[in-house]
Length: 315
Image (tube, rainbow, N blue to C red; front, side, top):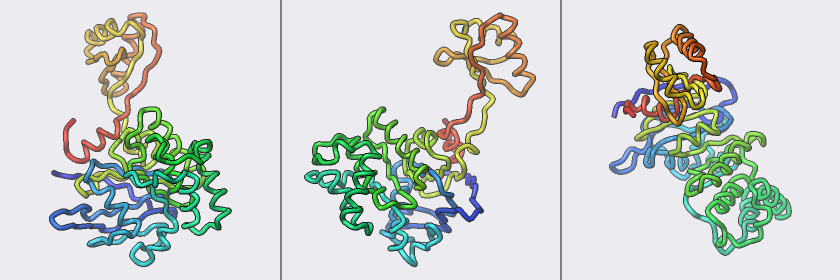
């Protein structure tokens, strides 16, 4: 598969993560293939299909595996030189179900607080504060075995945060959640920046990244597809969305007479325009027909389109 690599490398001193020539090979498989990128502080989505190399990247960041080639720096520290110091700055929320079901959320999270170096009493207080933050204050003394999937995900997030990390690694944080639980988890992730905690969120759901991340890294088959600020990747298309209420059919017919292609999607008119001249023509058609105009907006590309364009695939 051909890959066109588009990179937007941060050059300021606030770089959180720097990866240079990173390669990881297993027998018969290359999980990561010569990745070079820089990620600033903030919320970053690490996007790729299952098997793209996201979990391998996390294992390398945590020092749980060694790269075949290349280097990783987290907060200016080389993982190979001092993996313990790097891990002291990281929180990790794994994808798999790993919580002891006979323990309470308060016990689990406070234990991780102690492991991070907090005294016992401070760890208990910190655990209480974090569980309140993730919405488990009333459930913190209940055994985890009785928790729903969403509550277990929140507990995993809490244990990742209790040590006050500079960077938290979230591996598929919305996996298994219903739509409401997914929105609530994404809201929590979005709030972490207000506490000075940066996020690297591995996911295969591009909508999640587009909703909460200000930077995105896309990988496919271990190779870098695109890296950059989310906003800079979402180009405006030549598709204009027009809301004229129940007059959509009338507008589409009028645009066709004027030589503009248009369709109806979910009750809204989507017209393809090329430049200001055709935009003015569309406006004039609406005015000449005497139609009410409730909304007129230019559609952005989605991250799905960016990914497909980068991997050379067609929608």
